[in-house]
Amino acid sequence: MMRRVLLLAGIVGSAAAYPQGPVTANGAKLFDFEKAQLTEDILSKLDDVFQFDNGDDVKLNGRGAGADCKVFPGDSAWPSDAAWAKFGKAVGPGALIKTVPLASPCYNGPLYDAAKCDALTANWTNSFLHMADPTSMMSPVYQGLTCQVTEDPTQSCTLGALPYYAVNISTVAQVQLTINFARNNNIRLVVKNTGHDFSGKSGGAGSLSIWTHNLKNIKHIPSYSAPGTSYTGPAFKAGAGAQAFEMYEAANKKGLVVLGGEGKTVGIMGGYMQGGGHSPLSSLYGIAADQVLSMEVTTADGKFVTADFTQNTDLFWALRGGGGSTFGVVTSLIIKAYPDMQVTASNFSFAVGGDVTLENFWIGVRNYLDYFPSLAAEGIYAYWFILAGETGPTFKMMPFLAPGKTADETNALLAPWLAQLAALNIHVTPVTTNYDNFLTGWEASFPLEVVEKTHVASGSRLWPKENWANKESLDAMFNAIKTSSEAGLIIIAFLIDPSAQATPPDNAVNSAWRNTYSHMIQSVSWPLGASAEFQKETRQNFTFGAMQRWRDVSPGAGSYLAESDILEPNFQQSFYGKAYPRLLKLKKQLDPKDVFFAQTAVGSEFWQVVTADGLPSGNGKLCRVKK
Ligand SMILES: Cc1cc2nc3c(=O)[nH]c(=O)nc-3n(C[C@H](O)[C@H](O)[C@H](O)COP(=O)(O)OP(=O)(O)OC[C@H]3O[C@@H](n4cnc5c(N)ncnc54)[C@H](O)[C@@H]3O)c2cc1C
Ligand SMILES: *[C@@H]1O[C@H](CO)[C@@H](O)[C@H](O)[C@H]1NC(C)=O
Ligand SMILES: *[C@@H]1O[C@H](CO)[C@@H](O)[C@H](O)[C@H]1NC(C)=O
Ligand SMILES: *[C@@H]1O[C@H](CO)[C@@H](O)[C@H](O)[C@H]1NC(C)=O
Ligand SMILES: *[C@@H]1O[C@H](CO)[C@@H](O)[C@H](O)[C@H]1NC(C)=O
Image (cartoon, rainbow, N blue to C red):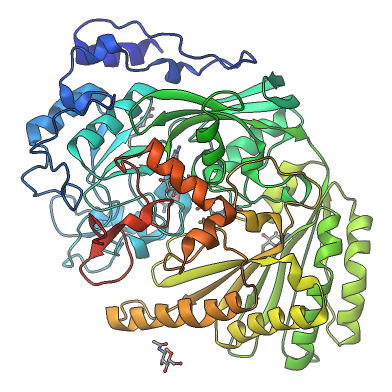
């Protein structure tokens, strides 16, 4: 705390006293980093680009106000080096980072370093590498692929969709200053937590980035209670930078579990929670955003507020499911925790070949679908794949996860389907393991995933429960899935029902999540380096062919915004469901100047990223859509 105060003191020339700020009703006090806020006293010593938006517009003339596009590097309205230096001084020593692409050591120039390049190349698909970098995006296809690791140092390395500058956040005051500076200069603002986003929403060309990764505080609250919610029980307050492995470990130490994703390094207190978030525990406890009890947020005007069941309730509603980078920058959250439990995980796979005919393979997969309603009712979460291959498709269950169940109970749940498989000459040998706590079971079952998608596009569907109403509708859905696999697409799917055992609170989570037994992703790839025309055609075929076939057999259903197609038509309905009209109204109210933008986020339909090659990415100016 003391260090932060001194940092800020640097900008105002005198030691500033920070207000205690709001204290949540239950006594869950602000973290020290949240007590370091801008005050009127500090602001009175700073010039107009650092001021809050009080509705009384600071003079933006000459800074591109009202222009068709956000101010871009090279534009006359882009802040001068001196102005950036002033900003750097305001946020404190070392906090403002000028972007250097992570792969720079692989390219000729002052940063060339063959040994460093080799080390980067060896680890390039490891998420730990990219999450520790201020700006690296784990879906480089949306960065524009302008600086990947390479063996050819003569190629060029440019920023592409990487932000121009990032602020390494360690206080709320820095978040406030960055929002104010970006808004008052009409610069594109982005937020990066880990950079896991499928659609590259943590980046954007010519932007200033708020990098939340180092907000790591985690505090156990043994017994939470607060006005406006009937919940009383264990909870955790954590900084927005806390990741799945950190939250699971902290909960485990207290004999508890929290909802997070299957992915080890996903930043579950950042984009995950705001976009909904599905979890291995969702069939027991619902969507991750349903667990949120309170949030600390800096809004588009630069003000720091608490959003919970009694304060800023509209904002609180929107931030639980309405998506990241839209309504504000969340710096910490309080979420529910539950007693730790045993989990059983079962792995198995089968493929066409030997005794297994192609016909029987598909009958076996079709049989599996029949069990989704009964398995979901038991709290089951299954993570499974259908991989296309030269010799025919492969089904992989990795894993079938049964929270709270013994190995015997789990095997009993699988037995009817496995008996059907055996009758089809599909003999599988499940490896079923019981773990006496969630953390150990999760660590054993979900290895660190490979990141860095360079020539892949994905789309997804939340298959509606109506599809299980009768044989015809389930067959129709099954046939659409099979057709995708036959076309060579990879299918990654979940058996999950967030409504199985939990009553959802009123929040902005996509209504399609309340009516599903399965979230299913399909992905198409193209040869790396394929022409822009070829990529466009591949993507068109995917979005309006393969994905349309899935939409055709699930009319009115939706898609999970965080694992979705960036080109999804009518994304407003697909990604936000019934919440969209209210979300858009709140977006206009809470962020009238569109300080926050991310592709496919609420209100993004009024803006477009103009790319040189016409491919969807963050690599271009952000401009208003002309009516
Ligand atoms: C390997 C892998 C595994 C995954 N597993 C799961 C899973 O099990 N369940 C699941 O639901 N999803 C999963 N996802 C998807 C995941 O939910 C999204 O990628 C999510 O966007 C990641 O959030 P992040 O904060 O880590 O990433 P980022 O890319 O840094 O941020 C995502 C978005 O949220 C915004 N944002 C981040 N932090 C804040 C903040 N504090 N305030 C405001 N806006 C913010 C960013 O601007 C961006 O738009 C997985 C993704 C990958 C790549
Ligand atoms: C790759 O990253 C891991 C940490 O995630 C690190 O331990 C290892 O040394 C790295 N390897 C190389 C070759 O840099
Ligand atoms: C970001 O700030 C943290 C302190 O909050 C520091 O530990 C870390 O090294 C900084 N990272 C970079 C890349 O400057
Ligand atoms: C299940 O499969 C995953 C992924 O292949 C693997 O990492 C894990 O070790 C397997 N677990 C068991 C118990 O076989
Ligand atoms: C797109 O689909 C059309 C019609 O099926 C097909 O002729 C074409 O080859 C496909 N293009 C690509 C790039 O896959």
